[in-house]
Length: 196
Image (cartoon, rainbow, N blue to C red; front, side):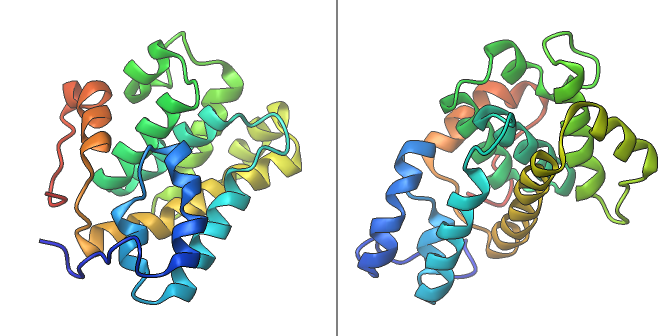
């Protein structure tokens, strides 16, 4: 049972208009955004931040950004965000082999070295205490420029917010996200957890 009841999408028409972004990303407006509408300034600011973070300014692809989000959400244990991230990665053209093997990105041949370091960065930046160190910095700069590193950390930080929001709220996970979660993550133990 969610901590706070999501509001109807019609509750705040400005949020509803901004939330059309999620119809492309996920195919639905997330219940997390519908809950944020209890304070529309938060829902609107969140959607605008999400759009800015997910915009492609360099070589960090939309699919890689969503895989970065998945690794971050997996590190924190947020089942809701894991399902959303894998669904968005699927919708933004991540390779089927990568989706099926995201759990083993460190060794699976479908991931390039530049993708591996981006995903290692996501993991290191998402754990407590933070594990970003000089060795990782050196690896990052071998493959990515400073603007691209900022884009990646934007995704990691955005999902840090979402992981805390959705796990604390017990946000009900939507059917489409459950479907993607079961398809790509279920074989490795993913389930809805408390997001029923």
